[in-house]
Amino acid sequence: MRIVQFKNKDSSTQVGLVEGEHLRLLQDIKSTYELGRMAFETGNSLVKLVEERAGNERVNYEALISNNQILLPLAHPDPYRSWITGTGLTHLGSAASRDKMHQKLASTDSEELTDSMKMFQMGLDGGKMHGEMPGVQPEWFYKGNGLCVVPTGHPLLSPAFALDGGEEPELAGLYIIDPTGQPFRMGFAIGNEFSDHKMEKINYLYLAHSKLRPSAYGPEMLISELPDHLQGMSSIKRGDQVVWQKEFLTGNANMSHNIANLEHHHFKYELFRQPGDVHVHYYGTAVASFADGIEVQDGDRFEIQIPEFGKPLVNPMRLV
Image (tube, rainbow, N blue to C red; front, side, top):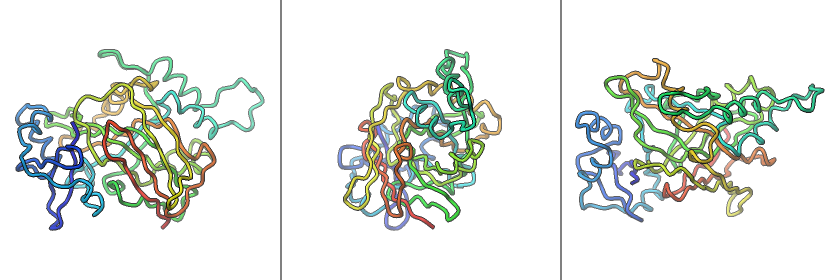
């Protein structure tokens, strides 16, 4: 089950259940954040609440996309109370790409592992959470608050001081902290964890700087069970030309860290368990065009699709 949040021409907001090319409107629900709070109050699952609230009124989904009316699938009313974070080196297909960026040029030992490969190996050896027993903690980074995220159709702005702007196609977990201080996972969305890979390549200690960039997630939020195996496609388009395209795999079956372990190590910090806060946590990528030598240009369009998530996440890049 997938839901979408959008705005009307009068700037009011609504939530719709995806049914093919239409959205079936939820009655008396203006936002997914409100829907989450209702789940806390009633004890009902989001799926049950959506089933109960879905009315007979439908709107054309594609028209909303064309008019740029789609909103982020989850956002806090106060953007300063949204935390945008992520983890890296979590996917079985990502280590080689990251290792190319972190080569120790002065190393005389060809067998020596880079720090990124050591981190990846730690995940392979012990990145799974089993029951209440957590695995090894992953790499972690901060991207910003709710001011730095945009919905599908809106540009990802690359600042003048940036060396590069590149996509990272991945899953994002969307959460609200409940009144008792426990994270409540609302669902999952396609994410583009846009980053400055050239800056990161200078020195891995620049990772924190390279991640302080806008990002995007959506357009739909999957509120039913996440399949263990997901196969997506990431593309970069320049006008009508496809300049780069690559398949990627995600989901627990394709990750060195499982999602439960990523959640544990993020939310173990009391700072991240403040009631009412929203968290968007990117789970890591398996592919990136930068690793294939692609330099994205002003106006290029990122398109990321996973069939189980419905419509693609589409964002142009703009240099500012």
